[in-house]
Length: 388
Image (cartoon, rainbow, N blue to C red; front, side):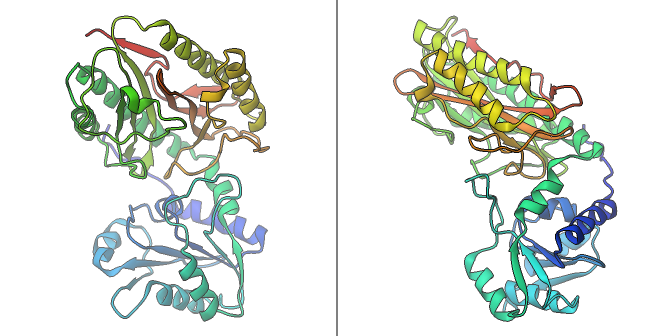
């Protein structure tokens, strides 16, 4: 599980630079987590940038307190530091001028036009305004659509890393199932999950949703409640439980959610919710393929909800991409007319949150293959009843 997978970073840089030339972008200033991990081959949690020219050598900009570690881990060799009197934006602007980009079309990470979710590391408004002030002759564009398209279709080595991350997620969910007992706290279950995935090789848990999530009882049923950070609430018999975990292996993330009922058999209203959820999941898994318009998948999911009379409690969103970040294409959201492509990897999603009954969530890593899709996790996408 822990053996390293070798990635060809110079080749992916060349692919990005070719795309930049096609788009007429002379310089790309990468600040997003997804782009930084993909370009650096190192984890950069602090304010960081990679200034990429359309031709030539990128410049990395690291916070000086983390620069020594990053220098030892990244393959890039042109590195400079910010901190103290040298502000982040000053060093970025200096790097742009060094490569002769002060009059170029400069792409920066501003935001996705498709997904309302906030991607970690987007350029701050204050930074954007200051860069425009320091480089007044440049033409500024939002480069997120370009870089997201480059990141969307995975290299073979990336798929192998996503498989390994999914294997770790399976181990974590098995640990969660073993830890679920009446009287145990949500935090205790999350702790067992974190221990299991770390021992299996996870290096970090995607933290925009507080790492491993565990919600039980009424906490599974907040309307639209896609996030349940674990608490000291005790899990009791007769409750539903959602566990959602996000391990990372060699910078690549998994995202797996499991649904449980604390009892040997679920009551009719819970079973009705589970039947609709399971049928929605099965419908989506059966239709995902290259060329499928995302809106068509969304419409199919919503139609199942309507047939079961549960559209009110289901979300109009069915997943997101996976890679070096979980805020990447394909965005499986209402209104997205993009098509799925071979070698895309997504966390297929289905969400139901019915107050007074409970909630069910799907986060399920799936690879788009030439003829359909392949689940990367082995954990069964169903409601699991736990004998109490």
